[in-house]
Image (tube, rainbow, N blue to C red; front, side, top):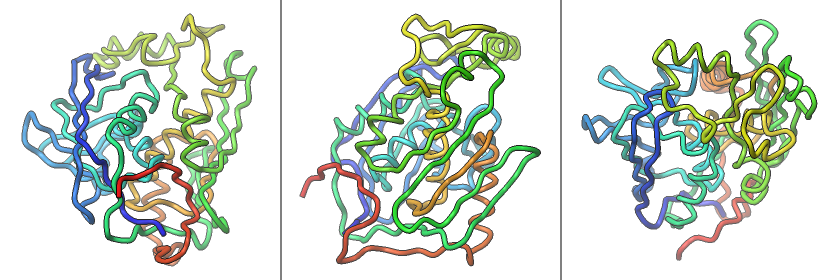
Length: 300
């Protein structure tokens, strides 16, 4: 049986905002059942729910907002929460973006492991895909397909760079919490040196460094420690997609398949899914095992 889940204890982390370069504090607190995931800008007292209706930007990250303010770079934290099946939490942040940490979900994984988890009384609902929903942008594609059980990612990238081409540009990942922790959560965001210099000139990526991203010049990875996985680039795309899919408001049962997709295309896909209720159904597993294996002990 799968039930709604929140964290057991309040936890806090400090880091730099990749675009603002400012020091930012993020605090995660337990939340009541049926409350969802809520971001709160403590510096201006504005609440922003984690939902597709709140997406205001997908160009350099996924940003949520309303008429008053916004919170950027939410995807890595949302991915970590989805990896542990946490669907109810209050996230206080004292700046305009979630800190980038090391560019992956791993620091947020550590934070959630420190917090622990509590199952709540209400049964968890899942969005099960009944038929394919597909979106395109030029030669780029993303789709959600029916899958008998579980959640699968089949993602392909296509970068004209010798390092990326030397490793696999396609990855297929069947979700469980343990496989997510081992195979996906440590994959870092990446970028190219010439783009980084252009962003700096535009007063963006002010907090970007070799400490929080894989940086490539024309020929090589500039980070001294190299790559964490041979296919770290495509695995980070899976990490991002997992976080962005959580904006549906439910854990997904189906297959996410994508070619050259990023935040913008996944956002289009989430919108297309919600716009077509005949393509999916909400299900629960009251009294029987759920098809997603979170494998993480919770407090009674």
